[in-house]
Length: 114
Figure (cartoon, rainbow, N blue to C red):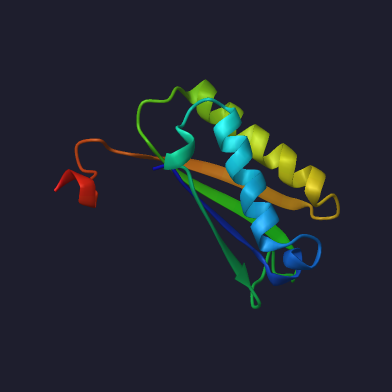
């Protein structure tokens, strides 16, 4: 916990390597001070087939899933930091976004909790 999953068009990987992009998202998430570094998980899904607004415009969307308890302001800051960094890395991509969903503590379970 937390999980950051980046969906993007395949051509995004022509500008930067997948490992570099994942590392940048990890660094930003850690820099916010909201998470322990060892808990941050980042993954990427690159799509060959997609449409954005009925066109084949490149896109990046980061889905963050975090444990409940952070304020709206903290989550907004996290989103803005990630989108700002991605905009810097990919200045020609106009479709860059992020959203954050909260895990509910009462229903969350992982192997260590068994």
